[in-house]
Length: 360
Image (cartoon, rainbow, N blue to C red):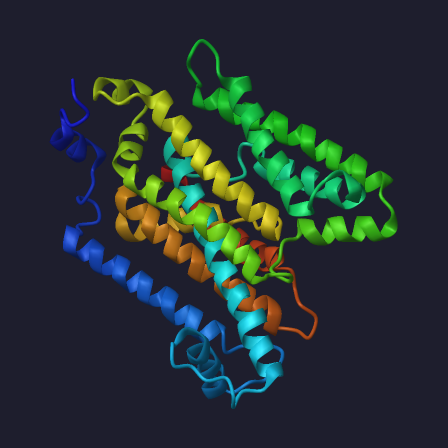
């Protein structure tokens, strides 16, 4: 039986386009609207900052850099540094991280068939936290804190996956429980490092755990784009397979789809971009949980649309949170605090209004 066998019947059984009543063209228009929202959010975010620079000067600096006929002669060095070296990389990094976390959240929720799953479910955040703490406490052991966090974040997920893999199968419940176990182990080791660290190292660990874009540079953008962009495109291309995986392993096999193969590919890609994002900016919660929910409320459960919509909404949301974090007070607020403050009431709203459907 081929993968396309029973496709029409599957479409009806999944209930796509019935509850929400959107045609293909309407969904495409919604995606274009979300893309426009992201562009507007980026355009507004680069004009905000602790240092007051006029909107005309901000866009003049941007055009001077991106246009082949750009001229920086009338622009002060200070303004150029603030806009092009500080604000633009930070804005782009926030969009990339928001895209990565929201996409990973949508993929994990589809693979695990659980709307309460987030990108950190398999222990990537705990592993990355341990790696970062290790890099902070033992500076000479690793090339950088970012590399150490990425290494141990990926290692945590690999350990959880192989712990749950039994007899050529990886049951969803076992995988989630393995992630909880591995995450708890790494959290305990982080606590040990915090207990033994010096005061300066302890403050740095705590600051890193709260997440933020304080040290965003163009190098971070250059590192993330070549990995996040192709990973996102591959996961988007596998959106139809993810629809089938969401029905369960037995249904997937009946339709000619190898659930183990596709789950492994999707989990590896989602883990890769999550580990990279966390290692760069620290732990930023709720984005990967909230954005897929928000997009399903708008577009329905079809992952061919949920994945790109969640990515754009995640980029816009995290950019708004970061803009608030750096402009609300004179002292910058860690963006992880902002996302948590906004995320908890949102989950409470979901549980009160759609609790039976979510917990199912």
